[in-house]
Each structure stands twice: as C-alpha cells, then as structure tokens.
Image (cartoon, rainbow, N blue to C red; front, side, top):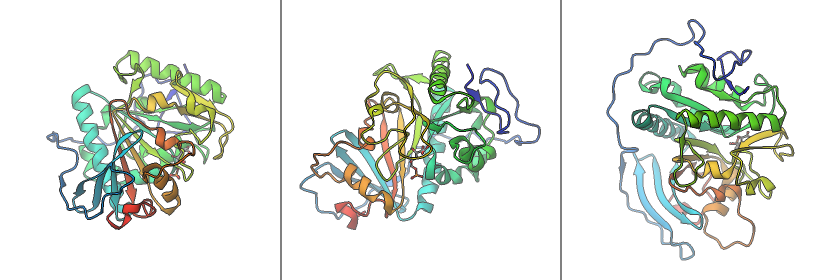
Length: 335
Ligand SMILES: O=C(O)[C@H](O)[C@@H](O)[C@H](O)[C@H](O)COP(=O)(O)O
C-alpha cells in the first residue's frame, strides 16, 4: 500500500506503516498544560429581529458567539444545520481555530485520536490561527490524524497539490507526527490513488484509528473541514456528475473535473455523511448564489447542489460564513 504518511519534506513520502521521526529540529517539544474540556462556543442568546420566512419555517435564532457571529439553526429538506455568520473572514478564522481545537480535545480524550479531514481551496488559509498561540502550545498535536477529502492527482510538490497547500500554510508549522498525515500516493493514476487511499482507510479503521459509524458502517471521521465552490460543489463532487450517486466506495476518482486540474480523488457522500462533525467554510460574494440555493428555502425544480446533499446521519453540520456569502439570503438584514 503506497498511501503515504507524509514526511514534512515534500521530497520524501514513505509508507504510512513505517514509523517516522520528524526531522531533527523541525518541531520543538511543546509543554502542554491539561486544559478542562469546554463547551463548544460560549454562546449567548440574542434577540433575532427577522420576521419568520413564510416559505421556510426552519430558521431559528440560536446565539451570537462572543458578539462576533450571529448563529441560526436552519432546517432544510436534507436536515438541520447551524449557520454562523461573521462580519469578516478574520473573525471567522479565529472562531474556526477555537472550534477545531475544542473538538480535537474532545476526541483526543474520548478516543485517544482526532481524525481531521480537510479540503483544498480557501479553507486552508482560514486555518491560519491554529498555528498561533494559544493553540500551538495547548493542542495535543500528537493525537491528530490528517486526511484529504479530495486531492488533485499531481505531484505533492506541485502548485496544484492540496497537500502542498496545507503543508505550506499549516502542517509544516505544527508538530503532528509525520506518520499521521495521509497524503495520496502521487506515483499512481487517479484510479490507483483512489484505491490506495481507500485501502489505507480500511487499515486505519481496522486498527481503530478511524471510527466506524454504527448507523452506516462507513468510516466516521471526527471532523471534516470543507470548502464549497461557487457552483455548490464540495470535495470533488460536482453538480450533475455521476459521482454524486456513488454509494458503495469510500473513495473514488474523477478524470473530468470541471475545476482544474481534471484528475482528482475524492471521498464519497456516504463517508462525508457519516462524519461526527462537518464544518463548511464559505466566504465571499462569489458563493452567495450557492448559499442562497442551499439555505434560502425557495422551492426549486432544479437538481440539488452537492452541498445540499450533505446530510449527516448522526452528526452536526455547521456553516462558517461571512456577510458577503449570505448576502442573498432573505434574512440578510438580521444576519
Ligand atoms: O481541491 C479542491 O479544489 C478543493 O478541495 C475544493 O473542493 C474546494 O474546497 C472548493 O472548490 C472551494 O474552494 P475555494 O474555497 O477556493 O473556492
């Protein structure tokens, strides 16, 4: 099995089964104070001034987070989600780091491991606060196992590589054991890399690193951090593509991605929908149309966008957005 646990050096990608030490001097020993488990978000209630939307009765105010975000519960045809709206991406990034760090602590205590799945795209920049204090010192990075919900089939040192993006911005700056960072085998075809990644996941399920969903039998990742394209795609699951209907494989491949580069591997919906937590990060006005389609509650005869197909069997789906991304929602005056 060639799926790699990735060394911090993009030049070396040994097997994930091979024990590895970080390169000398790359990660300092970090003293880690034992912090108590905190409730995710110390939220306070706010008045929600919006008149109820007659079309969609599923909107319910929840809270404002430290006066930086408005939070509402949105009930759509594919389930409930929490919508957080931040004034700017800067506040979103602060909150996303806190959310991720607190889930990391929860799962490290509960199961001795924290399995995190990330995408490519602008999401990665929004993770930048995790590499700063206090998280750099307080997160137990040794418990982290990092996966990609999708990856472009290019060399790992290629500018298009999602691994390289995450490595440059985030992974190179935190002491996650290199053997717990699961990049694709970039020497294989798209089909081969998908098979290889699925084999790797099966091994990690068998060894208890990755949990299994009792509800679905598919792997249950602790947290997926996803982005969404302006067309409503998530992972490499694009509108109208036959891969949207894949319901057996854990990982599949695409050779005609409308977003370049064309060859990619991707998690399938059954795996995404088996997650314990999914946080979708959507910023900017370019995404406002897809946000409106997904959360706006309008009756539509058109096909569901991929983002609308995220429907967790036994988990929590939370949207981290900014004002620009929700600017087409009817409730925008109150968001
Ligand atoms: O490899 C990829 O292309 C990404 O994983 C992809 O799914 C991304 O998350 C969305 O396209 C959103 O990207 P932006 O946030 O950059 O628009």
